[in-house]
Image (cartoon, rainbow, N blue to C red; front, side, top):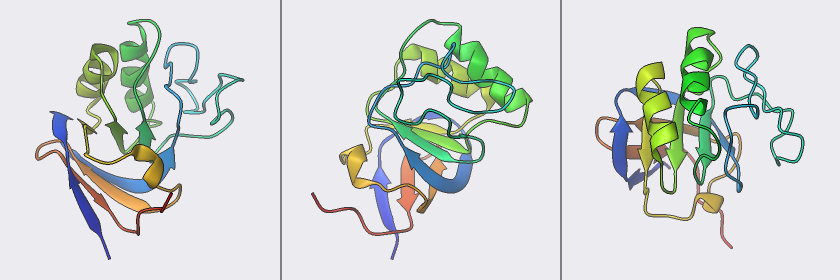
Length: 139
């Protein structure tokens, strides 16, 4: 049974893939390899994991404005997430998603920690919808 959440659409388009959840913010400049799509920040909980084709769920971005260009480079290299969901997106992530053509929503109305890795989801940046194809995790 799918759960549909409504947030704020920030970057247009739709993307579908398995969820990859981070409880920590992500720095795209220096924290993600634009050639491989792998999280390289050693202290990050997702260190060593690939984001290509995933619905990347994280609270917000952190770091330099050049992180926007890293998101664009990921898209150009075919290593971008299929979509992204933030608790509260800030300009670095929004600009990167727009120029990279990566669907992005924020404020989905639930705690992002209720979502589980590997569950298929669809992000619709036009409508602000997140369709999650599993049950939400109980806390």
